[in-house]
Length: 430
Ligand code: AMP
Ligand code: GLY
Image 1: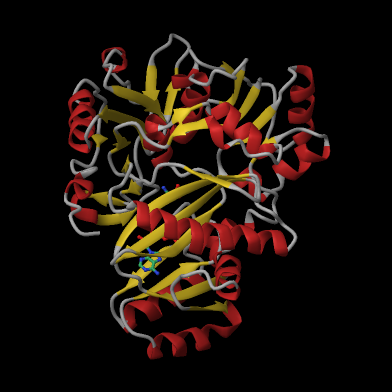
Image 2 (image 1 turned 90 degrees about the vertical axis):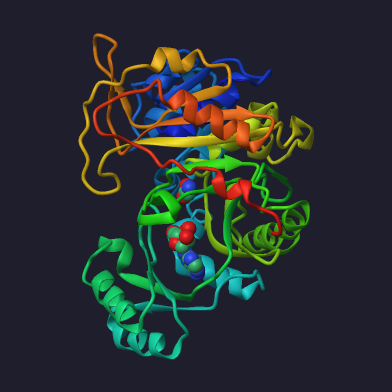
């Protein structure tokens, strides 16, 4: 099977790694790819995401059996719809189905109307800002104010006081998150522990991958600003078999049924962002694609034929046997970032020690924001630079391997959290 993978981050490097390990893979092409993929994929530079015609032509020319779309933006714009019109199998939802990520309000309405557990909320547009202010005054604290649209995981303000909530409303409507904040969702605060579950689906049936836990804040101890994610581990013990069953029965299956019923079945990876409180899961958010940096950990413990699994979902005939086991051991993916991220940071710094890190059999090194110079030197090129994913029989081993390996890698202003995975070690009574 020939696959065209779209995307360039750590998540896509992990997908490439999963395809490379798949018995059913023929040739893997990656657009635009990243320097970490160059030994396992053919990097493509001849197509454009702004012109689906170039992708369709590429697929015909290279006998592509499956297109896998990593990031949300092309899905939201309708790339999967464009390709399907030409009979190309795509792993990734239609633009209509991708609204579960591109509009938080839309997603909340769907959950509410189908009884899927999530925090109570109301939606407001800018013209009705006064109603938003009145609403927060009536709600308990803390309260969560969210931009409706896509804001790279950063469009959420958790207000501890009513004053902060009023400020958040004003700032979002004044353009803090640009267009994404032209309407807002105000929702009750959910307490508990967060986890992410990825459901691979053909629209009807699902295969759930290993549950993961992301670390969204920039600093140790879950302090500092929200980021795209500073590290993740899988499987997350907080998601016990009982919790996983509830996620399947009370969240994933009713959500897929709701989407079918509304006329936009979801095909791809349904990302379920959860809050788990005393064993009860509620939805914090849905995304329409794999998570980053969770995928690096989730696919590092996956056993099976990933290419076959995603292809079967794309053609509407989910093959449960393509996954032999959700998880073998544990994986802990520590993100190495550029100092300053998620605010301003520098790029172009030479990265040393990659060869040594790549030799470590207990680790997968995933590139996220890197660039290869013409002489082959690898330099930093983004906020999140690398994911150092340690493997181990126990979570503690995986954490240890990641942090040991990371010491081989140096660049100016490198930054990482030192407590990725720690929460998973402390789970006694989820
Ligand atoms: P989202 O972009 O909706 O995933 O929100 C980003 C982060 O904000 C989440 O990962 C949570 O840590 C936090 N968050 C969002 N909504 C809530 C909520 N209702 N209660 C508590 N925390 C929340
Ligand atoms: N790790 C969170 C996300 O991918 O949105």
